[in-house]
Image (cartoon, rainbow, N blue to C red; front, side, top):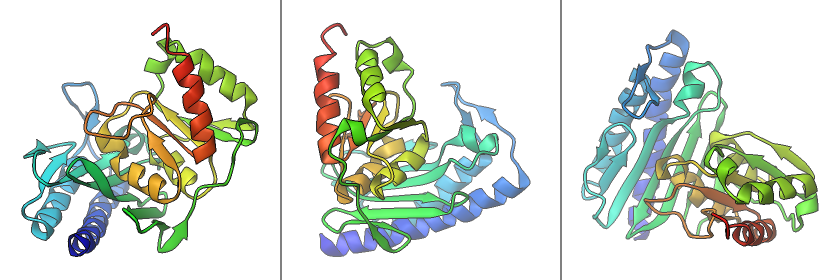
Length: 262
């Protein structure tokens, strides 16, 4: 398996680089926006980037399945499955905001084992492989040692569903107690968490393709990454609670205790 992961990491990084070239081209020239059936935007940059990624990944691991944001899944029952969001944050991209990225992850028998998160305009690329730590542009990163909610910096992303949930009040209490609250969103707050600049990330409305690579990175940086119920990420994951071990545990206890009225 080691050789497979070595090959996979090299391919994922190459694919992220190929996607970056396409995305940066359209970032400079501009693109037309199409609204998909689920009312989310898509551009030629998304589609061309995914095609480039798929070609590189398929060549490296021809027996692996690929599940991509724009072209769907070919076979998620295979031993290895790539999870790809070529341009996560298309809304930011079309509004000229640099908070978008390319997300590439590899799943082995249902477990996320590799992740590459590339944000070319923002200027960061992070990656991780199970058991090998997390890296930012070639330098190792680690979550902070923050152990209490009063010292914690919290970031929220997509939380529309949570606003109608009994856990909304629990989040409010954590925010009031915390040291600082921000809303970095997208890849950005996960990068900040993995390199020790944040302590807790909360989102209630995500897709596994948005966060699969980031889950590996945060975990390998020493953090804990689950959904809001404490379950590990999988293909059906729709929410995130990620943080330093102590802060994550405290937040999960509070959120779980507030779910009676859901």
